[in-house]
Image (cartoon, each protein chain N blue to C red):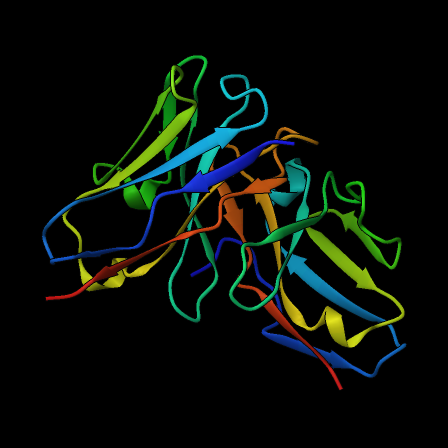
Length: 109
Length: 119
């Protein structure tokens, strides 16, 4: 049972836009920043978004993040086949523990 | 640029313990937390706990309290995660991860260590 709730899968065509939701509670997302990670098969996760909507150096602006209340959203525009991966949201809670969503598998049709 | 390099794969018997290492190179070690995150086959990410090397203070996810111990050796820039009373459900890839850009986002990840628990 994951701390945060994500849809198991999303799909869209190349060039299109997709959004991935992440739902939490007042004890986690509601009072903390959200980060997003991309995990390609057989590799370690990679940070895509931190502090709700900021991109680390080297992450293209096709990736964006937002947060409202106890939910957050990752947006990916101009989908590419190389974007096929698992995506995870993450945050911290009031007990100083980190938590992740169950992951969303993105398929680029 | 800081890199985290983990120890190699392990195969353990149920009931035994495993200790995985995570060595930092190329940057400051003690000032940043090191977390341990595991991923069972085909499953999602699960945070186990973290340590602040400069203070030597660790906190753990409730699920692993009493079974996991995270330590750090500042002299060798190495963090360790020891998990005891292993069971088959502990079979997973174990990652160490550390924040740099933001205190609560994991920028840097080790390559992962596969731990297999099997009789």
